[in-house]
Image 1: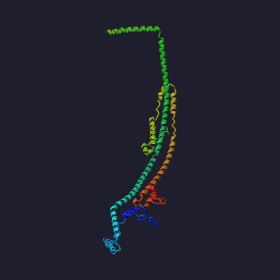
Image 2 (image 1 turned 90 degrees about the horizontal axis):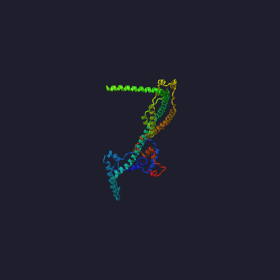
Image 3 (image 1 turned 180 degrees about the horizontal axis):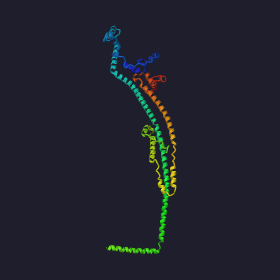
Image 4 (image 1 turned 30 degrees about the horizontal axis):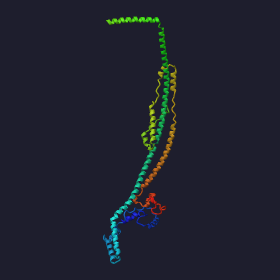
Length: 252
Length: 161
């Protein structure tokens, strides 16, 4: 857990591992001397395994073949007892202070460690998620841009239709004009001929009317007064005869 | 009547309409209404002129020779076709449009190539959680902190944090 905290701060620096600022220059000069183009191996996800929070697992693995599972514990106990009994480590007031401090530290790490770790992890994850979002957005927008460009190219291919439409319009206008001219010619010729016929008819009509009037006038003027008396007398005798016959019919 | 009636090409208005971009739609609609009006006018006129009944006129009209003269002149008359002044212009427009279109397609292809390149860069990128800051600066040059311009942390103007 401690190592994870260190990694969060260590990411900001070059290279891997919890190196202080002073050693950056040393690592830079180290890098320039060995120019290897091999890709950098992936960063380890978790720190080295430890037992009881502080003792690396490698010690246990080292001692296992010779002393089994209890080996390192025996070593630790033995060392501790040796140092206490021989007074290589002297018990004084500092010991008590150290014990209290270590107790508090262990207690607080056990209590708040996971939440702090989660918080640090979340910070990192947020950064990664934001970067991922940017990348996804960029990829989708690029793909969309490519699609749009292809669509525009397809649209451009249809340009010949516009010109076909225009030429069609021109041809239709010409054809319409030609037909109109044709019809106009025919109609004009017809009108001329019809006019002639109408003229002729009018002439004949006028001649006819005039002749009829003239004939009537001359006939009327040629009826003499004596002829008129004779015709009236004849009419009266005819009427009398007709009256006699109708009377005879009515009586029968 | 040779030479007239350059064959009208059938235009698929639906396919045409699909290819029109939205900002040119009004122009397309105007063109369509005009074309429809012209073709309606064309179809309303009969193709051949009505025939003149010469026999009837010959018997009806008294003046001798008039009908014959008319008939002779009428059959000899050739109505001139209207002169086509616009097709050449349209062809010139089309050639120019083809030129600009090919130029546009070239530019468009170049743009597509550029987009493809950037897309490939994104596809071949290593995942973010395996990157170091160095890798990040290589992939996205805009994240590189300018240590010469701002030598003190955070190496960028405070407003940009």
